[in-house]
Length: 215
Image (tube, rainbow, N blue to C red; front, side, top):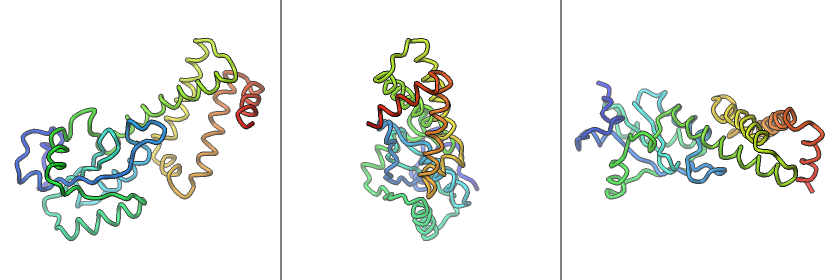
């Protein structure tokens, strides 16, 4: 029998229920926005976990420091260990199971709460948040070299955010950004950002700004 949605709702979990839930400390903090988890980095891991019949649900906390796995009640301990180790290794993720009772209790207290935990593709919400933060930063960098009146600045932020959202939330593109093809993927994203800014500021202005940044 499949574990019920009681976990997702965080509703009066019994001691027996919580034995199906494991937490793993994981370094998935967003480099560009350190207060939140990295959606594009964590989503492939979460989806990979949920594809297996051993796992019912896989979650990431908002800060990007803990992955939670709800196991199928038929899963055996040896199978869990082998599967979780191979999955984390495949994604080059140095994660450690939380065994400390006090730490587990702290994590269980708010597990599944909206805005605190994100399951699977829900981490796209974090990616969109990150895209907005980075877009604002890019606009600020541009302003260091070229003045932007408020209306134009808002358009630049919106355009740049759209590019970042595309790359952060698209499954294939996000995987490229964090895989062996990361260098080429980031170059392609940068080229799209240049085009997006050029359409608003003019290619000559963008070329001049990039030249000044490179000095």
